[in-house]
Image (tube, rainbow, N blue to C red; front, side, top):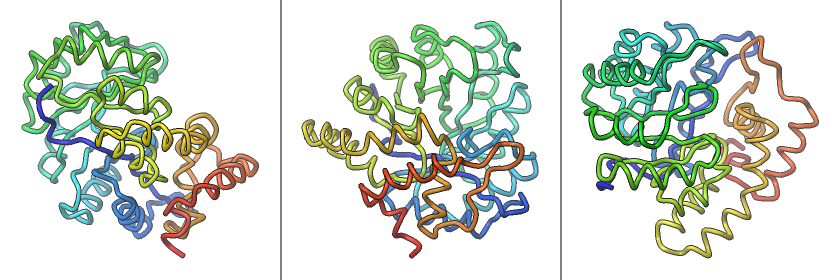
Length: 306
């Protein structure tokens, strides 16, 4: 692998709404400030964990401009620009670059539960997006897209499509896929990354992952794992992973993208933790379990705004 431009912990920024469902930009800025204070090496916006599927095109533009202006170069920002249409995704990606994005993250084209395209069309899609921009593309390989992306195919795109160089692997057997992708892609695979809230973070680091895109609630905890591993303190990394795994698991398997919002609301970071309708609010029992698990670890999020 080549030396990566971006590595470390790049958590997903949740989108903050007011009680009436409108964007809460004041909370959004506080959210970003907390995540940087908590040690994020970079940020990712407009991802699935940002409820991008509930945002209008205008709101995407507002959030991109607001967050990138507020970050003001403190850390690099990845903007998710996923869309089924090649031209629309390319346009989104170009606008993100013009706004100051360091990278774009793009899922393969899909719609609903059944609409997919062939491997040849997926290749042409990413090539079309690449031709429109001068910043890296991260391919998000996640089950929600329902599009099989083999390590062989990903490595080929890395070697043949100019901006395709980062990969967020969230499928079953992620560590094995990362290891094979690195073997096949060589230096063209600049950034093999862990995802899925860090539930397989330690095996993925052992397989060669250089970045982790997790939830936004406790980057300080994730940093203890990644930093120790990168420093060669493998036993410390394993102990940190075991320490934080109950909270990682609670986010991944119980609370989902509402975990970060609940933690941020509890710690005074944001004013409202509600998702956008029709997604249901976090069940009170799940919220209580999340907070109980978090309090054992004393993450910054529970103290930052108090």
